[in-house]
Amino acid sequence: MTILNQVVLASSNPGKIKEFSALLNPLGIELIPQSTLGISDAQEPFLTFVENALAKARHASHYSGRAAMADDSGICVSALQGEPGVHSARFAEQEFGSRSDEANNRKLIGLLQDQADRSAWYVAVLVLVLRADDPQPIIAQAIWKGQIVDQPQGNNGFGYDPHFYLPEEGCTAASLSIERKNQISHRAKALKMLHAQLIEHNLIA
Image (tube, rainbow, N blue to C red; front, side, top):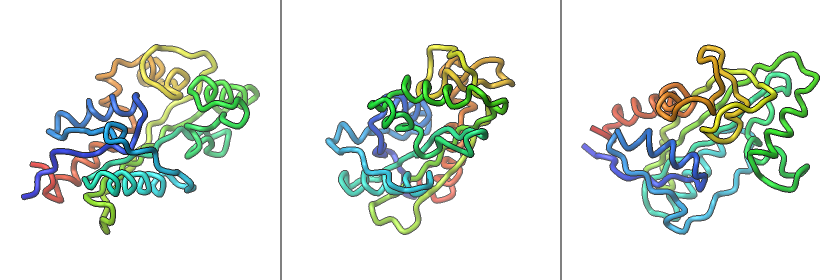
């Protein structure tokens, strides 16, 4: 039986590194951020989450020579026909000249000022490859439904979390404890799916 005990994470995002470490460590998998190996971020030119995640995982695996995992995630808003979607991280880059959570949220709230429909959902796609040319990548995808609120709430989380309201929790994603978020988020759901596939493929005990 092959045991997968180390995985390179194809991300330099501190928030993602923290979340994935908390989610993967209990499975006995050591997460190695690609930045600690001197690996730069891959290009994300594709129109779908799964294609971007696969490109990032293959990039990290190629330059590290190890198994690698990547996620491509973002927020989709009904009133904006699913945008920002795959552009979530760089949503406001052209308008505000910076790629920051604050700028992205400011643009999103501005676009929704006259919209009654505030429904939205986070998407997370996880891709794991054992090697750069792995012909059978393991893929898991999940969503997390909520609503966009104008006023930010909470100091936890990152990205659009302060504006992502969860009616069933009575608060925004940024108001959740790390432990609670890691139980119900889009990444947590996708990781549970990935976990089941890792067991099926005999990659973890």
